[in-house]
Length: 410
Image 1 (cartoon, rainbow, N blue to C red):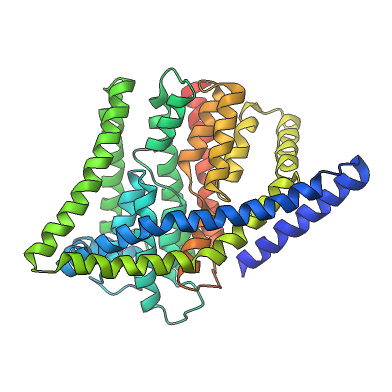
Image 2: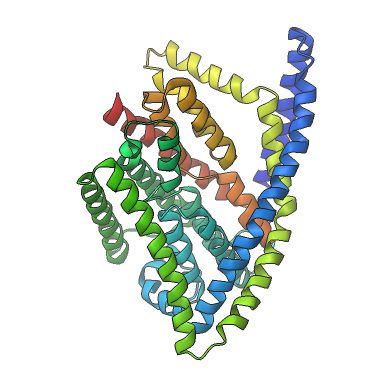
């Protein structure tokens, strides 16, 4: 229902603003630009789905081997003490907890192509437990918020973009992103737990969160001992080694259980193809709405308005020029990436705005894209508090990114 209202708002606001630009400014290009955006966004949605087909088939095939080889069940048992508290509606030891863990691990390593199919597999398993098939369950919403908060340890793609744009030290935003995304995820967990009345004040959760804080502190310290070139090399190598270890580990586990791993892979890959086809209408809907909103000039007006308010309050408005990346990120990953590159091109990769745009890009995830893809893959129409929790986590990440960027680079 929330997505319905947001989708309608995109079109109505865009139409009113475009009409005003035509009448009062004589801008005859705005409506053609909006119509062009509908066609280009539709094409982009199809291309994204088409591009996902191979990746989905690969990873759902690997996950099927892991299921039949017993790896997913082993992970479920290991994580059960924590997940039974964050996801109290999921039966203890259910295989979905293994899928959730694999998805979160892939996101933390910046492996988006691997994370999406693993996440879709988890949603499919949670839908099997869902008593209201068109309404998001509490576990689905907690899982979506963990995804949209964008917890990332190794932001490989952002480091690559900074290197391409001529940054003196492409990795100088590594620690700021790690800190900002941690605050975003922590906020998302707390807010969703309040909505769902989950008690976080218990020994298991406190030890887990404390351990996570220590782990992040250790990673920060370890990478701070490396120079920029070595940091890039180590982060990329670690991510890829872990990814290949997962693939080989699942295959070996299947062999130990005397599973026909090839047939298992094919069975899972078929599911990947079907899932890719199912999400096309949902992607077209959300990306067309976003495209029209951007083409009408509504996004530019929003940024200008925020800048005027910040200046009137006497607050340093240096960060406002980077806000397009932050505001676009919940709507479109490729759009936010374009905003980030544009900011580095306009202001310089090593400028405050250029660096803050990169931190914005790494501190949250594409909330509406994730909602459209994940909920669309299992036919969820009523999202309940998923959008509110996801956007509040995004807001926490944006505020943290601004504060941390001033701390490191002002």
